[in-house]
Image 1: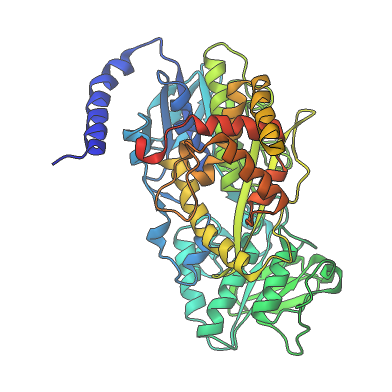
Image 2: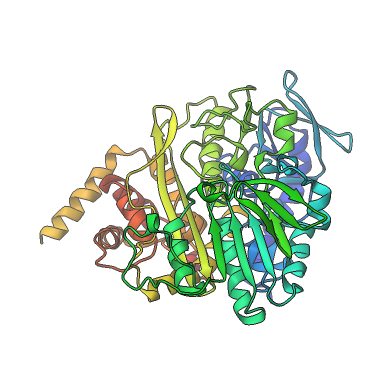
Length: 444
Length: 100
């Protein structure tokens, strides 16, 4: 017995088979090539298909399976497995008729509008979308390198073998050991990420290594959702909130008489990292040397390598774009989405890439049809974060264009510090639901 | 009665909005509430096919905190009445999950 849904998807599959070969010979079809099948590229392809049924859409992606970075710190504590991070391209291929090619873009001929790949294939485009994510600048931390990140002091900021290595190091750490997280300077992917990671590891230690400790050393003096994190750490891990963050804190904040399981050293207190010493497993900071059993360095970042190679980046390593169409200000008919782009007030987050990609998809559909895109788009970012598995909060903002730049609309952007425990718990439940929903909205 | 009049006024005012702008605004909801407002097997709810007046009233209640929420208080406060009305109309017209 075949269900209606199965019948429909089978019918869709057959019609795709019947139509595709003819379609690929149709010379007059507009061609859109997307480099990078992450949240930005995949959401873009899905939503462009909804607006432009007749456009040829190709995604060129190096990896056959997408490993989502958001939520990947949950692997470190065994809350989820590496395989739980995997997202496939089945729906893009079968439901949205997107040609997902596993290959690597290596060359751009911007005059002829052609992309060349490692396999030797050439793809002509009317519009090219580059959504390459980030590249980690390991060498910006003296003494650190990609090789050391893969063997000794993982960054785990792009999920993969470094994530598993870091998990194993944390879980095999001696009792009473220290994990040191080196937080990056702005701007970087997933602003709450280093602090959520520290909190989740502290929570894991409460059960498995109760005399262990997490230290976060930081070049910055504040960070996203900082007050919510510090309050959560105070309640859960014995962290003492610095005086300058006490404004607006609820009455139940406790001054702990013993050191907590988590410590944060801001730049003004000497937290800025200077160098990494792999042989002594220590990090030299402006405030002195910190030795640790596990060292997790989240290095400075720039736009993914291909964006640099193609000449899409500015002197700071990010890609300037038009904020309506995300067309590069460097190369015509090439658009840049997600973390790699300069999106002003928007953070470098998966959710931000998702909403940018939808705006860009609609804009490019209009451009391909010779029409003017909607000039007044809106974007959103929503990000739930955890200070513990049952203790969540969020950042949220709606963005609009103001004088050609993306600006945040005036509204509260964080969970109220006086939120009830039930709301904190609810935010933790929604954190899991939100991650699933927005993955589906991007890929399924 | 007063409430009903305000709601009707909001619904009428949507004509000033291009349909695509409403859709672009609505696409900001679908990251959580699912593509076309339908989300399955989730703690989050589908909003496709939701009655427009209920949509608007719910957003007003999120703004005032009359209805408790996590992010929706902030999101609702960041949207104009016109935008909320346009999105309400947009989602009302979409088929509910089981009708798809």
